[in-house]
Image (cartoon, rainbow, N blue to C red; front, side):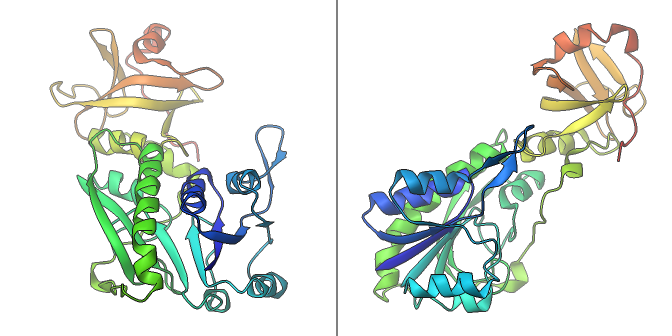
Length: 313
């Protein structure tokens, strides 16, 4: 069986390595072009490219799969099956039609819930206690294709999007290997999703991480975990961005100060929110390293009782 693999970020390396270790023939790895990264805008290859080169696999980096030449290049490989993991581009019908067995995709949610680009973030923001991973066959709709397999898992109350997504791709890669033989030999029929139960997530933007102190403290705490590692959660203090790395809800303390006000109790920095009080356990001021909230508070003694800045958008 000839497989083409499409993926780009570090999490996509997990299923790529799993397929190779299981002995599957990867005839090409398709990934995004090298792009500038870092403060110096150094041209940097996607992690999947580096992994493919390490594994001795041929790499293709088309600017877009909308390019007829790129589609022809894939067709010339005569793939039987495609596997997609966070490639970074929606596949059009002419690309989807190339492999007779279609494309299988790992999606870190219990589809049809949380379709789209940010399923783990969506589950954390919603306060879910359970989520999971799905292996599905791609079609032209957004994560709407039929499902081959799913596995549910608890969503811990301290889960952070980055680490949890990695864990879901590890689980999903094993799930993919488990169902591949039956699917390839026609012994597993994918089951259609129920569109009436579908929910969608949107692309995460930088401004999504900015705190509105008028919302409940529990929602801000979820933001800190849902937007880790990117874009992070932040407010503005004295005109400078202050990242919130770890926070806790303090329902035991009465919110006696105006919303957005910095105050303290037992040496810990606190901020009044729309509902309850938020404790800043670890923060990172602009241009500095992460620090304990109490250490940061020591440098702000004269400003206790002041409010965080309004939106900087």
